[in-house]
Amino acid sequence: MGLKPSVLEKFPLPDDLAEAIKDAQRFKNEAKRRQLQYIGKLMRQIEPEPIQAALDKVRNKHAQASAELHKLEALRDRLVEEGDSAIEEVLEKFPSADRQRLRQLVRQANKEKKQSKPPKAYREIFQTLKELNDDA
Image (cartoon, rainbow, N blue to C red; front, side, top):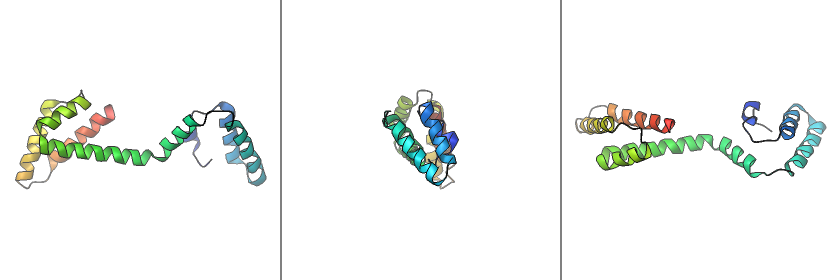
């Protein structure tokens, strides 16, 4: 009920249920209560799993994005620490990755770390992984 119309359009809802929800968002007090009962009646006639999955996806969107970034950060750390073995893993996960560029960035990141320079290559590895993940 509290979702924006643009978000509601993405849900796998039958037309009559979607229309009933839009109407309920406009109604006040007693009319809204009756409309909610009508929505309940309509929902008993359909499978709730696809709708629940879409709702969970909307609610957990930020958490999923954050978890994905944490995975990429861990992968970047492994790349810098392990080198070639981790590069092979990245290439398996992202076949479009540029092996030569990744190796170059890993060497540069290790060099910057030894010389106590700002971690420019370290950040660039993360950006590269993020782009590969977005493309996949």
